[in-house]
Image (cartoon, rainbow, N blue to C red):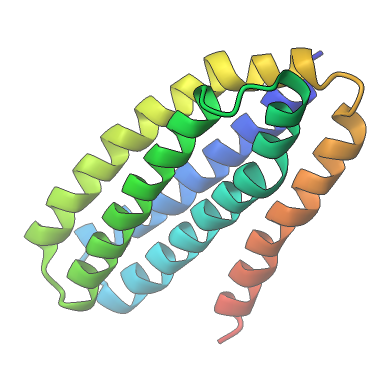
Length: 158
């Protein structure tokens, strides 16, 4: 059983669905819907990053003593993806579909590569190394990421 990998991979898929919703709205030039959907996507990804950087990565680093290994690479990629999301958000606000598309394509490619590394390398390592903490850690990750769902519902009710 791989509870960390299973939970975090599902969260990747949930974020992917939010981006697909934004992409559909952009294709239809429904700018208000696109902005709302992209904001939900961005918030979800940032919550995911916060859960990894605030809970999962520190637990892994403490257990393994690896502070400059895979978690450092993931943090570096998180920084790049945050910048791409901001650039895409600004393009959306300007209703510049071409500029948005450029940033979004780069973001999507980077996100897919990043997720594959986490799902196939880092998360299995976490499941192996943190097996004695898995239950509590997954509960804490769920709680941290739950803020994503709460925010999405707030956006829907506006």
